[in-house]
Length: 154
Image 1: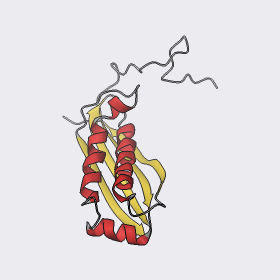
Image 2: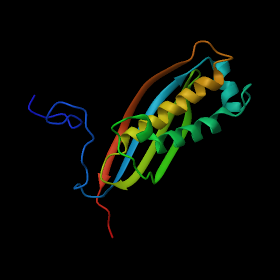
Image 3: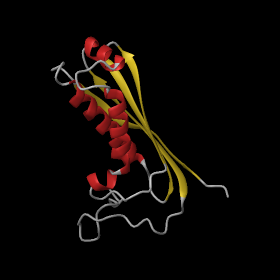
């Protein structure tokens, strides 16, 4: 393999990538994951009828908050002034809820880690808020769906 890993310096040590000379571009990322639970659990979740309260609103805010704090959670992520973060939920089957996060920034580095973190923390929040009524919860398929950048027009 001739390509050098970007987070490894010449001595083989972990290092933050220098993006200071990269152009500022509009960058967008979309990540997605699946939260699985019993049908009755998802019914209660979507109706806002859980013992811990309205879980979707809490998970949405938790995901957005996590995207904003990605650099504090993942050591070599750049601190980014996140300009947009959205977390949405869609029931895709009786026992599956799809979580989608979209993040956007005008910056020098990608924003996919923030989208992935938003999905992950939203899913973990749903787990926390439903674990008392369902012992068969599962989180699957967290992945980046889209990642693109475009030149900013002045």
